[in-house]
Length: 296
Ligand SMILES: Nc1ncnc2c1ncn2[C@@H]1O[C@H](COP(=O)(O)OP(=O)(O)OP(=O)(O)O)[C@@H](O)[C@H]1O
Image (cartoon, rainbow, N blue to C red; front, side):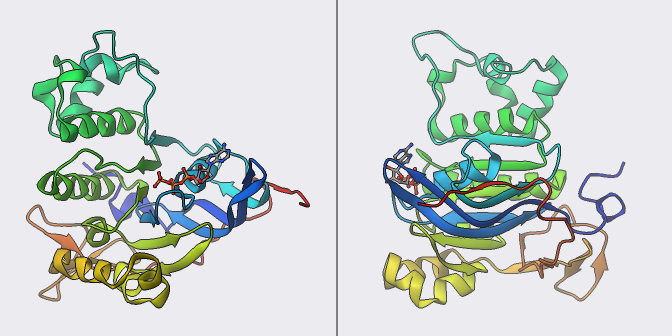
């Protein structure tokens, strides 16, 4: 059976979201300004930056929860978003099983829920109380809940909070696998680098505005990044860098280390090489753009 990520179904790279000069003004100040980036189907974009640098604000503008006060945000018409916010407002005094958590805000049948839990590796926890889950199990449950919506774009605000280092590696691997298997775009938020840098395609470093952007390697080498995070942080990347054994080509095929090209990843493939993204996506900006030209 063809998967969504198979080139036969994928077609040309498709832009899901595009921010152009986006800014958000609240409480008498600009929280972020002049933010520009696109997310394409199949791409993992990571926003990094210190606390309060505007990562959540930017992500919330990207998905339409916040309306920008300047610039514009375009979304693919009908875009389905799976969003895991940084904080959840759940009444923890009420008993809640993992299976029930899956259907809190939208009805899903038992087989859909079972499939989502299996895909994040927590089938055995369907009947467990959410409150009793470990940090990593809880994050997986939230991921299962988000992918149940079969999103075109998955937005994960600090998905490894409360997770130990080994768990972080496993979660980022899982997020990469979800991208490979479903072909969705992913917007990740992290306040630091850690292993996220190894699995992401494009890093956008925020500090109220975009400080620098590019592949993980180019961002780690940039002076702006060093200024924001200190020289030690770049060393962190080197520690977590994986050996890439295959590279996703722009047309969706996969180039392996031995030079062979296949239609998709092999089951035993490891981490991904850099994507050579084509950012010249052909969508008509201007039609569904949301945004304001507020003069402040
Ligand atoms: N509705 C609002 N009104 C006023 N200020 C806000 C509002 N929402 C967020 N802020 C402020 O905007 C700044 C950016 O917040 P945001 O949550 O986007 O940062 P962040 O980079 O995601 O931070 P963290 O890493 O701490 O989660 C913060 O200083 C925050 O206090």
